[in-house]
View 1 (cartoon, helix red, strand yellow):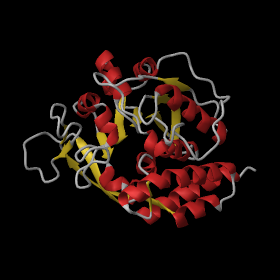
View 2 (cartoon, rainbow, N blue to C red; view 1 turned 90 degrees about the vertical axis):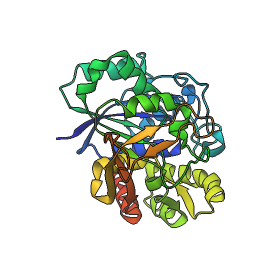
View 3 (tube, rainbow, N blue to C red; view 1 turned 60 degrees about the horizontal axis):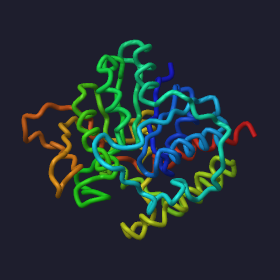
View 4 (cartoon, helix red, strand yellow; view 1 turned 60 degrees about the vertical axis):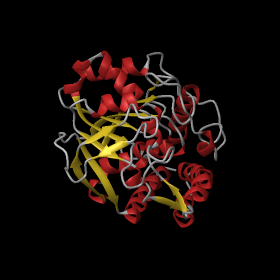
Length: 316
């Protein structure tokens, strides 16, 4: 039976690839809906970009909902320097046919969970955690319905990518991250320690492009743009492909290694705001709240991604 999921995202090229990977895996994942949040770019662009991915993949039947435009208590920080002014530079932007639903994303999350069986729906946030935290705060009765939260965010050994201490998604809304990490439901967290291992090298992007179907070509175009900023920043051979790690973990957990830990978020310090304190060696008595993923078979990850993207050409 396919696992029921909601993807909460802020596309972003890497969020877009996460959506495409989920679209390509209907036997394992039943994507109930896509919710969007202000993050990599403002909300009006994140929901458009998500709907573009639905069009490109031929999944116009997946409902898309716009959520919170701003973090809980802070002004929004965005990342156009990485993702481009559209949030999804590398492909031509268009007004998608996939409609934007009228319902607010937070209300959709609450309604869907309240109507669900206990322990039945997995939430997959790949942007700031504002929508998820707001839903929890607004209706705590949704918590028993959540099977697991699989999120991209945070860092331990890698340090931060937006400040010396903080990864972008957590930094944008640390108060929301704190609410989610203390919610009491099972959480799998894939931070920079693991996502920096899956680099979109030229050879890997060329393999994606060689598939020849429109979805693969769009993916290669997005990754070719996405590569520019991070290869200079990290002096690496390709940009880290962060967000698809969440969906890949759901589909092929054997590609990853993780450890049950306590993860807490800094919400007060001016110097280390958004830092994720990962008690990897259990040196405190703070309770375990996260399965912290720290290693991935990068070649296996790209082999799997390419195999799934190839599916979009099978009916053409």
